[in-house]
Structures are given as structure tokens and as C-alpha cells.
Image 1 (tube, one colour):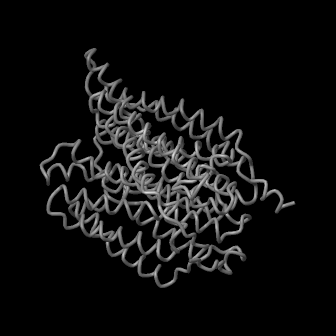
Image 2: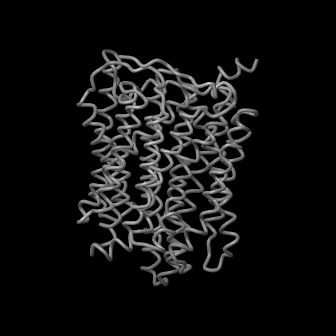
Image 3: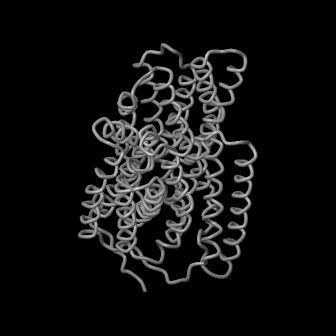
Length: 479
């Protein structure tokens, strides 16, 4: 069964197609929930009488589910229509949100988060695949700038939104507020969405599904164990087991590529531009999530700010990132990627170095400025990288390319968090053993983690230098 390809008039007139606008809005709403529970951990500890490591699972299980489900979306999006995929994703998300809002036990709350994440996992690949199908290549930068708001700004604004909500209500309000908004977006989408692209018949390889879920889920789980300070053997063994299963998954996909449709088509990695963009965005996202966990620790534990004050301090950077997305996209359409990604990657290194100089008395205006530079630089990096990476693929691989991007984004988030917390913990513990005061030891650990982030960011600069300004098809179109 196939669905007739529909390209809206807006795609050819410089306007963002309505289908993309709707999917951006829906994706923003669902991805916001990935980080919205970070500030709620103290409330959950008190309400459910659990320790911090247990309470953190409200965020960990969301990330874990995303990593396990996203690899399946490449196959899913090729076999179901746009409306079917959207309806499935949003219905599952709404069910998970409602379940979490009324959860009678902590275990049910975690189940609600799993269901939420399963719906969320479909939305980003659906958005990216649809965009690449309906938007002309010459206009993709501008439209991708709007997409940046959904896939990068939403996680950045999650802690701010939760800080505001928690100031006036319980943790359940985080779900109660989202529920009617997600419901309205679902209703609007089902009224106006058109089917885009063609469906491809085929059976799912359930062995690949199981191995992918266990492999990517296991890898993210092992990395989160590192970030929670678990013993060295258990996280290491879990990471190794996850990597081994991912190896099995890769071999299985290579075999399926020669016979029938793979769950995740690894031929996307044959494109050097896509591969560079994939690594670039993974490293940048890793740095973003590392900063997202380190800055609240510094502001609340060292500078004694409240969660709301912390959220308000980092909010301007998140807003600037979102508001500048369309501008970055238009600049990309006009000048190409290199004038954006090279200065942005250098600015990321500079801001990381600035964060590594945190002190007990650093002025808040300076911290705000560093965070804004960091977030604006990420916006200038993400939009060109997304556009160049997916644009380098043939249309039939768009869904698999966006699926792999989403999967690596979750792995990068887990790795960035684990690395930041591990470096901070090791450095602080060593100083405490030498008799250094608790606050100074923790501050030194945070600075050490940002220093490691600055070193890793140098790799981002190196990749940015070899990323092309435009894809060959774009050059031909402009010739």
C-alpha cells in the first residue's frame, strides 16, 4: 500500500509548509518532557520517600526508552503513513502523560514515563523525514532553523519550565499542564495533517528490534550508572554488554541489507558528509547535556540559588537559541554551512574554557553571558549540521538517517552526563581526601569537568573545518 506524495504550495514559495509547522509544535511539546523532571527530583524524594539515585530514574528511564525505541522508527516511518505515525505517537504520549499524572506509586510513575518516551521517540524522526521530503533543498536551512527549536531548545528549556511550575504546584502539575496542550496539538494535527511520501510494504525483523532495544538501551543504562556513582564493575559490564549487542545489531543489519529491508539502514554511513555531521552533532549535544547538569549543581550547591532562580538564569540562553534558529537557517541558505559552523565551534570551546574558570564569586552577568554564547553557538552549529547531514542522503534513506541521528543523540546525552558527573566526582573525592572543604572540592570537580568538555570541543572544531559548505546537489542548483 502506498500513499500519494503531497507537497504543499508553501514549500515552493518560501513559506514553511503547514505539515512541518504542526510537527515542529508537536515535537517541541513531547521533547520538552525529556528534561522537565530534572528539577522535580527533590520533590519526588520527599513525596515517595526514595533516595536521589532512585528518584533520578524519572529522567533516566525516559532517556533509556528513547534510545531503545528510536532505532525502530526508520522501519516504522517507511511502513506507516504520516497521519498514522503522528496519531500513534501522540496517543501513546498522551496515555503516558495521563498515567504519570495520576500515578499511585513510584513504579507507575516510571511506567508513565516509559510510555511517554515511546511516543516521543517517533516524533523527531517523523519531523525530520517529512521536512526533507516536502521542503526544497534551497530552503531547508531556514526551515531547519525552526526545527532546531524543537529538538535542541526544548530539552534546554525543560528545567526552566519545571522550575516555574514547581514554584506554584506539586510535581504532578508538570504532567497536568502538558496534558491539555498535547491534546490540543494532537487534535489540530489530526485535522490538518496530510500524508507525505510513500509507504513501503515489508515485515519487521523482530530479532533486530530486540537486539537494538537491548543494545542501545543497555549502553545508555550503563552510562547512567556511571553518572549515578555506581560501583565500577556494574556500569562497565553493562556498557560492554550494550556495545556487544550493538555489534550484533550492526552485523544483522548488514546481512538484511543484502536480502530484505533492515531495521536501520547503515548505508547512511557511506556518506562522508552525513558521518561528519553525525559525529559533530553527537559531540555538541554531549557538551550541551554535560553543561545542563553541571551548571545547576554549581548554582544551587555552590551559589545557593533556588531551582526557580537557576531556571531563570539559564532561560535567556535557551530562548536565544530558539529565537535565532530561523535566522541561522536563512544565513545557511544564503552563505552555506562553513561560515556558521567554524566560528560556532570555536565559540563553544571559548565558552567551555570560561565555564572552567567558575569561582565562588563569579558575577552572574558573566555566567549569563557565557551561557548565552554557548547556546547561540550550538544553534549556529546544529542547524547547518542537520541540514547538510540529512541533505547528503538519497530520499529513501531520510527516515533511517533521522533515526540514527535521534539514537546517537540519546547515547551522546547519556555519555555527556556520565562523563561530566564522573570527572566531577573523582576530582572532588580526591580533594576531599586531602582535607579540602566540601564546597571547594565540588567547585574544583565542576571546573575539571568543564575543562574536559573544552578539550572534547576541540574535536568539534576539527570536524567543522572539514564539513562542506553545501551539498553537491545544492551547488548544482545554485550554478
